[in-house]
Amino acid sequence: MIDETETIDEFLARHSADVERAVREAAAAEILPRFRRLAAHEIDQKSGPHDLVTDADRLAEQRLTEVLGALLPGSVVVGEEAVHADPAVYEAIQGDAPVWIIDPVDGTRQFVQGDDGFCSMVALALRGVVHGAWIYAPALERFATAVRGQGAFLDGERLFAGPPAPGRDLVVATSHPDYTTDAQRHALRTLWSDGLAPRHCGSAGLEYLAVARGELDATGFSWEAAWDHAAGLLLVEEAGGAHLTRDGEPFRITGGNALPFTAARDAATTRRVAELLRTAA
Image (tube, rainbow, N blue to C red; front, side, top):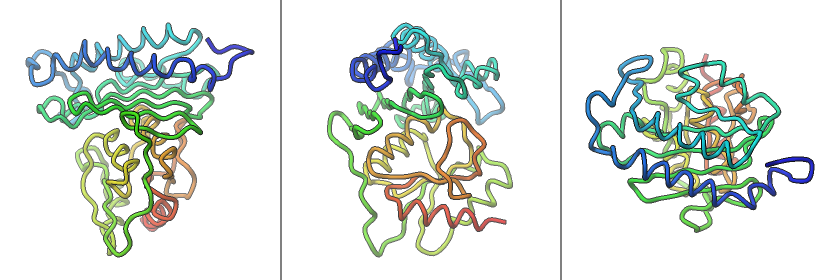
């Protein structure tokens, strides 16, 4: 528990490994047993045919909510599926209590299709600042973590994104058109310009991991749901990267961002992509 004698950093020093264990156990119990074994009745639509939810999403989130809430008494949980059931849950991100932000299966469409490009994401935030991040790709057997001010790691190895190699086009992963409005697609078209090589993104968490590893130069995302971004943005920051919205301000998990926004492997690339996004009328 965080109280007057313990900071959130001290909590993370004692319990970061416990969070990792909880994420691994949720995946082992609820996600992997259903991977490539989903029955039709275990898959539902939310807002439409491109917005899917499965029993794995719901049950993994329930498990994580129970375990993480018990690990940090007084904390609250903002999970993707809980917010879908009750949008008012999202307001906790702006409160004073520590908040666990959970995306139980990021890349549900890939998961449903039997593609291994999905992950579970958990972030721990306090008053709008993300302090801890855990991203687990169970089918790929990769686990990334970050604690603010202490670096980003993949399977125990320190991550350094570094600048892009000079003289080549920047590879930018952008929001998939299935998940964007006409206005958002118009703004993202600014990235189809000389010196950039845009492509549509898959799992947001895995795209953030690719940026932190220096395998992807930048992202261009058009939505701000905190569960898709909180953990990944901290991972990128701690690997030496940065993020900016189209008005030149860092992305805020509490919302109200000028969209689209970018996260990139170094500050110069971040500014370059953000400036392009700003040119959209």
